[in-house]
Image (cartoon, rainbow, N blue to C red; front, side, top):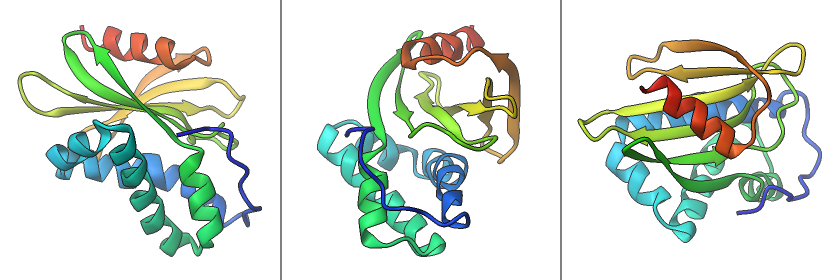
Length: 162
């Protein structure tokens, strides 16, 4: 998927899709439908369809047009990653414009079972905060970071897991 898709204008209310995708829909999928989520993210075609399905759910809630849903789905990129000895996926979001919107999120399957869910979120001053979520739905804060690229984000997630 490409992160350079042109998106038809959104209302201020519709801009909530960004947080909903990273903080709710993908998080719930990762923890409650782990095998389905990892299976869907494993291939580029299935990852694209999975992201589109997630955006379709969000689109209904935020009253997005079909064109907006399609363009937003195309603006999200999924890439496999290794986090230490574990496997996972990094999802690159469109550039965050508001506090707590994500630059990236990572879903990591632990070899011993379970899932790690990590986010790199925009701060008030335009910086970044490394965060995560646990299976109980608690938001975790690991501290401020310089804005990172995808590889830097994966390295920070790996450092947390040591």
